[in-house]
Amino acid sequence: MEKTTLIPPVDVFETGDKYILVLDMPGTTKEGIEVSAENDTLTIKGSVQELSEEWTPLSSEFRLGDYKRDFTIGSKIDHEKIDAKYDNGVLTIELTKSEHAKPRKIDVKLN
Image 1 (tube, rainbow, N blue to C red):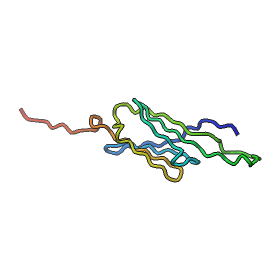
Image 2: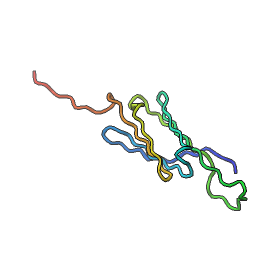
Image 3: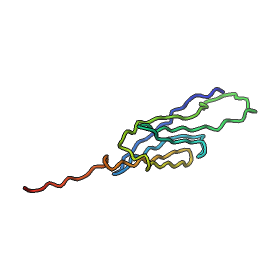
């Protein structure tokens, strides 16, 4: 079977100080996932384990390939505080907002 590049589906959430990405990446392992941040780009790659070469496919509904997805994150994200967790085919990435991107309350003073 020929491998293709798969784009994992993602849900994006926001909390007070974080963005959370949840990606569906079945067939990968923790060791097969690579998450990197360079300049303004977050890159996610995942290798899918190969099926046995001894098997002869009679019918194939699953696409065989490796995952890759890029996100533009800009300067709103603190690159030192990116956290990734993988569990049961789901990759969760927490992107902490940089201090200057967090909302802040400005006090109004009387003259």
